[in-house]
Image 1 (cartoon, rainbow, N blue to C red):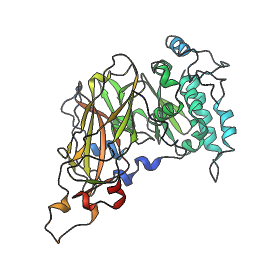
Image 2 (cartoon, rainbow, N blue to C red; image 1 turned 90 degrees about the vertical axis):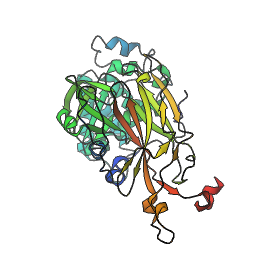
Image 3 (cartoon, rainbow, N blue to C red; image 1 turned 135 degrees about the horizontal axis):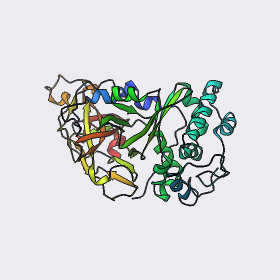
Length: 388
């Protein structure tokens, strides 16, 4: 399926609010998540959420030949060409360029030093794909600001980057979204991820973190090497690119009870070979009452979609919930006439979760930033919504 990132705005600011407490502090209801390794270990949803210059050839030279070769052998340092098909530039050079486009107030020297140290550690660990992806997408210029508060990088290995199909690797907007789903604010060592059982990315996506069979898993990926420290951050190397959930289209804020959401929410799901195949996964919509944090398991209709299987291949597919509607009666509509509540009682949060039907576990979540305000009937909508 075609990706639809061309209409999406490029993030150029620190997106801390995308997963901040203003969206998530209402959640205090347990959502049991079972892992095959320990079916008795129920995980609370609150634990997850609260911790919550290119030449057109893409970022792989010769359609991935360099990365595929590096899977079994170390890559020589100082290559004149990066895996993006352009001249390799250090992040230090990009930091100097970034000084001309820094936001008001600038970036302090500590952030720039941390960004340069990230490259040094990543290169030394053989994670050339990470460095080149940052440069290819423009995120390298934003690293000093990101690193000021500390960052955790969930870095796919070079071999993992090579598993993305060439068409995806040549799309800088798509790769940018993938990176934002692999970088987390704050410094989280392996023990921290195990304790919190989550990793919340800058793009707002929450990945489950768990030990399974003695191995560490984050989202849909296995951790190969953990706790590679750098100044103001840490890198964890992953064996595959994690599945990424991104909103291509959000529903409007005001909706009608028992009517399909307008416009229909649409998500882009990016998966890569090396992770579990998409034949094991479903995408589930879930509704939370904003005021109470209560999870409403039977509140939606048309909220389950199976992902299209393409065994051992990476893919980008769009999933549209065209018949998704809210079936639960909002609290204010259950009151007698004349005893109405304010609109806050009718507000809900919409989450979309990646369900692994093999391990019977939710492995990743993405929430729609816009809350839903459910109206009793079409006639209660404002004029602009009626016209839509």
